[in-house]
Amino acid sequence: MRDWAKARRERTRHLIELGGLVQKAGLVDLTDDDRATLLGAFLDIAGQLQGKNDTAPVDLKARWRRAGLHAFDADRDHD
Image (tube, rainbow, N blue to C red; front, side, top):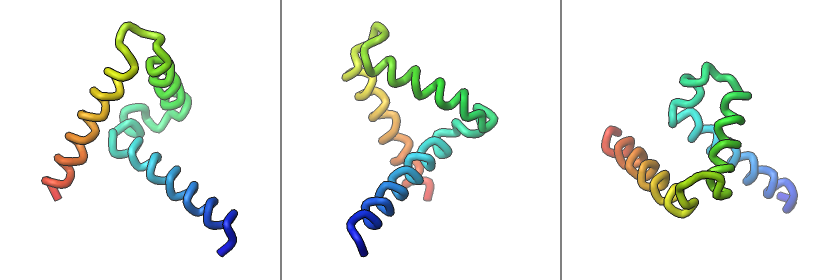
């Protein structure tokens, strides 16, 4: 397989996995699959990580990571 095809396949898989996280978080249903709303939410998150709020970006990432790991663990325990 050519390098560009392999890289494209890896990128596609990565993007599909990210979309799965959006679904897993319930954001598709909560926003009625409104992509503008989802993009706005992601832009807000990006702004927070750029320091445009009172909470330090490192603290936000740590809090969000803990919540994500907890959700993955709960899914694993449920299965």
